[in-house]
Length: 399
Image (cartoon, rainbow, N blue to C red; front, top):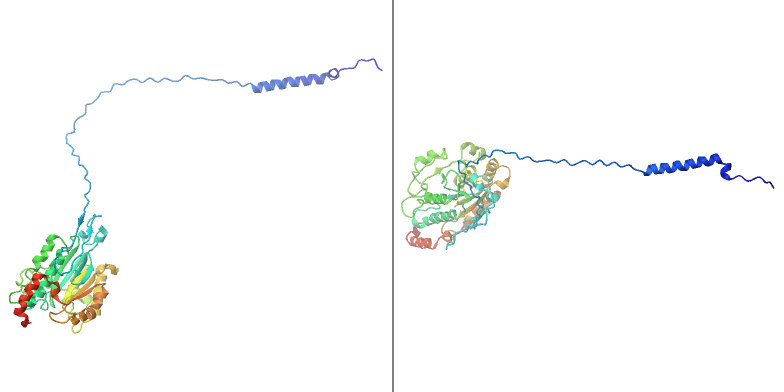
């Protein structure tokens, strides 16, 4: 056993121990250095702004030299008006008038091109001696020749009744519709006015004035157009030339009309006589009035070919005419509605045949309606019936 003393660990490893201690001390210093954060706070003082009062000169306000009138806006009035046909105690055709509860937009009919339907109105249905149609621009073409205006007071009651019922229908039309009237027989067509008119009270009165002299029950004359002055013939080719010096039994004035020769040649070239009788009146309603509803009252079918006539050809001529006037849309073309008056005291079978076989192509081709007046007394007032019975006892045997 050795007696030498044992060396300690640190004594044996003196250099290594010193190195280890040094590393520990440096590690501690690094940790402390990282943990220490130096914060420097720089605090700035807030700036102070002082407002200095600036004295500015004040100018006195001047009064306005021109006074200004302030207009208060008034609310638009609402129109609530009920239009109804006059309740007549008679068996006559009536116009069912629409009820107006408000107006939308302006009156389109004023310009002649605008539709009343576009401004919120419903067109009334017009019952013209049984033929019914609705329209904005309505034209009546009425026979005032020898077949409707006879040679004695009893037979002249027919013409008087037709004229009176026409007046009633015109008076019942609403003011926003347009209308015109023409009378005719074989060789003449006389317009009341050259242009279609609004159905205002003044224009309705014009119809009354225009027809007032027609068909007096007493007096020596043949019919409305008989013994017309030369001025009528001179005015035919100069439409719209007015003639106002006519016989006492004719209209108060007239605008005589014939279809211009170039148009007659274009639309009806192969007819012997061109447009005559009711056919000339319909051509006037299309070419001059641009109507959308045409009513014809006649006692027979007569056209420019003579004999039995040619309904299909005259219908075709009107279609060509409408194509030029209204365009290709057939919905814009007028309706042609026909009333055939049966001769007094005669069976109405003949009148029905005329309506169906002769006027059938025209009525169907233009979406129209037709009717027959079997007995004109059905359209007379009580006073007119009393007057007719009075004249019957005196003049019936002269017919």
